[in-house]
Length: 156
Image 1 (cartoon, rainbow, N blue to C red):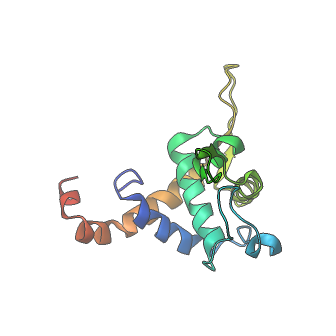
Image 2: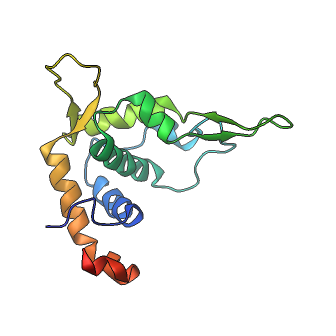
């Protein structure tokens, strides 16, 4: 069975974004059309489905790097802020966008809070079995396209 580790991220995220439209909990708030995705950006996103694409990317990141929290997710989507004459500075992305998408993914049952009984500091969100199944299903469906685009993947 093909997993989300076996296909390139760009093809997986496009396939996941299409599936995110079928979940009624995952939808862009009314303010999403006017908001920037971080202080390092000058303008809001121009794509109509940027919220579903970001949700798909966050779901993939939670699966790979989990347990992970809002702050770390926002750092993943940060970038270099142009400060004029001074050197560029690394800044985080919008924590509000990351937090809202994580809440929507949790409401839809794709991620869950980690129940860490060992008492360590690894708190955050992890992928749920439903989210794992969705990722593997989409990865299996885009496998043929990935093999056409990248011929070396046939060996794996």
